[in-house]
Length: 245
Image 1 (cartoon, rainbow, N blue to C red):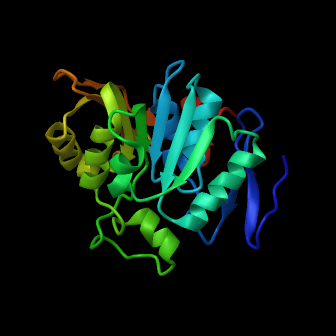
Image 2 (image 1 turned 90 degrees about the vertical axis):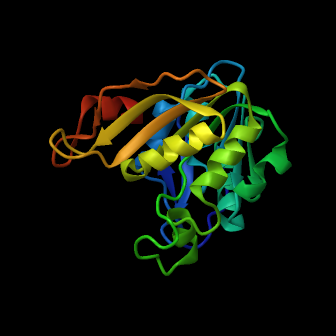
């Protein structure tokens, strides 16, 4: 289905199932972190998924393409981004599989109710409100800094909306890993699997992918590092597989 583009918008080919997504450089465009999270998350047949802070809808669209999940919901506080995400859902004919909801992450459990989903995914703002230079354009600032919600808000609400035994998947920065694990345990999401992402084999990690289980026992598997580039501008074979090139 074709949809009308607004000024400044373009359509990006996702290289999966023929799916495409609408993007606008004035807003926050999806990056590799969202794609890697969609490859890390394990969504099983018949399961329901909630993506918190979906932006323009990249994660639910990729998860629908890659997994046998039954239905995907996505919550976004910025109305313009949510509207763009809905048009991308329409563009791909996925209205029966993906719902984009306007709303605040801090109110997620009130919006959806408790124990409502098998899986929660999130690619949240990485920086605290006081950390780093904020982009003068508000949509990008909200996407990158904890202006509208905090890490604790996200983990608390994820724990509430997850069914017992439900799984939580997040991509974040390694520098906040201690805080992430502490908050997960505080709210009853036991860290179960973690993978560090390195730009090159000899460089320190700049992303962390983490899985948690609501009500799980204490034991975490640390997977081998994920290396992005063989050399400048050349992706590793695993990155090619995740992207679907």
